[in-house]
View 1 (cartoon, rainbow, N blue to C red):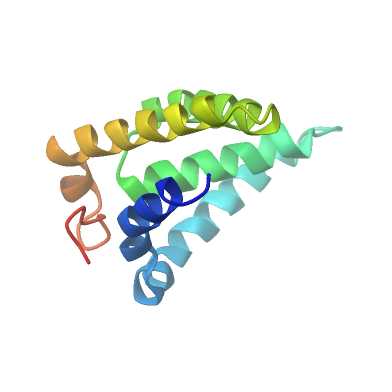
View 2 (cartoon, rainbow, N blue to C red; view 1 turned 90 degrees about the vertical axis):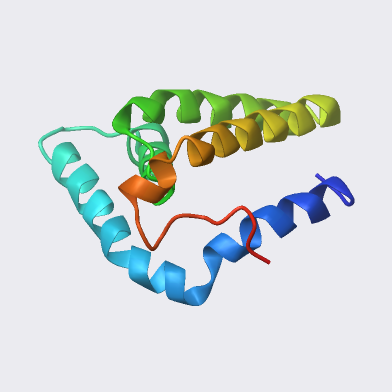
Length: 128
């Protein structure tokens, strides 16, 4: 995604990733990673990307946003479709995937789930 769409996107997400927020969130990320590694230790073979990396990314994002575990799969599917659109250089589909995610974020935020599940860490859509 290029400007001006990317500029708008960065303006929305940048406040969420201030250093103090990331420092406070690091222990949760480490716990998610440790739990995933533990669940994979009993296997003889692991497909790292799909069974760890993608799962880690989805769980961290849902935890950060205060989303419940039932959002793991919809978010994972969104990410895969977005990746497919990006690799196909389908700019219209990539932008569409961004707006779908933004609508999900806004709907979750306004229903209060971000504020109630992750106080102090919740994104502020009006932050500057």
